[in-house]
Amino acid sequence: MDVLAVDWDNLESEYLCPYCHQLLYTEFKTKVDYCLTKTCKKSIATKTNTAPVSVDKEKNRKLLNLRLLLLNQRELVSYIYYKRGKIIDELFSKPLIPSNYYELLALGEILMELNHFPPVGRSKDTAKFDEIIVQYLKLINEIDFIEDIENNRTVIGSKDEILQIKYWPVFLEQYRNYGILTPGTNLKELFQYATLEQRSKHKFEFGKGDFSEFFKEHYAQIIAIKYILERYFRTKQQYAYNVDPFDIVALLGLFFSIPDGYSTWDESSLRKHLEKNSKGSRKFNIFSQEYLNGNKVPIISFIDQKQIRLHSKTLLFFIFYLVGLYSLKSTNPQSSRILIEPKEKASGNFEEEIREKFRSNDWQVKKSCFRLYENTFDYDVIAVKNDKSRICLVEAKYLDIPPSSISGITLLKDKVLDEQGEIVFANRHEERLNFFSKHFAEFKKKIPILEGTDSSTSVNAVIVYKWKPVLKKYRSISFFSLDESFIQ
Image 1: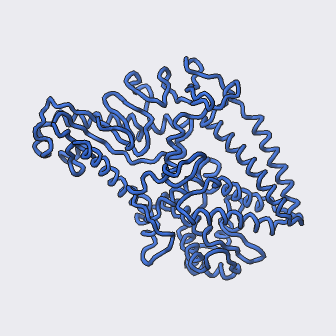
Image 2 (image 1 turned 90 degrees about the horizontal axis):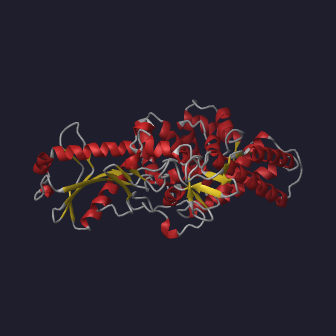
Image 3 (image 1 turned 180 degrees about the horizontal axis):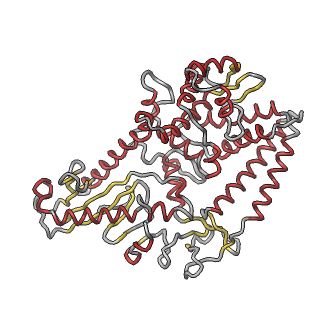
């Protein structure tokens, strides 16, 4: 959408600068808001050159790789694989993504490095292994911090002030909804929409029947795993597996064929297993390069002297992730519905929750979505105050915030100005409001709760989002999240 088409004078937002309408950033210590527009009265001088940090990053990586060379590859790979498995075991022991998921990402990255630069040393000292892991965690934190700066999620002021995009806490709310722990998380803040999403309370036990139904039941876990593995653009690229549906079938077969915990298969048995499940359409060497000994993506299992080391929960973790990847790109209707169908059901529950909030505040509500004529507007929620003094038209938006949108470069465009942004939705809802007013008499005939109102009755229109919107108001349209007071 053309930015010039926006009516900036009739726009309100606590996340945008009131003067230049660009994103606001909050300084950590003072909690004062600034923008990055140099000519604006709310601007703050910033440091923009990350080159020295990037040079140090590459220098530290090379030094770490040199230290890796001195270690015993077989023992180190096994140690890191088991350490990663321990984190994944913790993940599946309760419906939470532990706050040390950053370590899980780091361990996956080390496994990639080990396949890319195989160590040739003899040392089997686990203390040295732990030291290398700590150093890699430090390095990866530096790399992620650089990406935050390059994408304007985080800004360093000219006096070394640290500022973060003001909308960031809203994104963390979304993380917590999927059980992803963040620093300072109150456990009461977790799983905000678990009831609406009718999440399963089962403990990851496959039952009989269609596997797609199981994955739909656990779609929230699939989304949570996707969010942590794709937290950064760099990690999203790392976990870009070239997934084939037969890979998922083969990995599921492995999962069912091994006991809980760790086990070993010989390479020839795995080859036969894959050929059987893929009916010869998936070659073992391609499968192996993608998941067992590749250096472009983190390995799921690893080959040790023609023996495949397997961990049941690691298999399940990556099965969930691969199902999410495949369902998003698949043209097969059944596969693509795995994530879409549960969200659609949750969206319907979201609308009903909005209706219930009106009912509990002395309003009458149309029981379902309404359309006056074919090819006209849908009205998600129509509510009338019991005393007939007010009418409210609600557009419900049960939408998550894509991680790629949370940056200073993309947030304003994706969330506000894009074709699926808040301005477009506001314009559309304003048209919906005008249509309602113009055809009020016809609506009144078909909607009994409008009895007792007339064309002079106050009508307001609001958009209610799953998560707090960037905008507060645009022209006549107000924006809210479900937990805000949208009943006026």
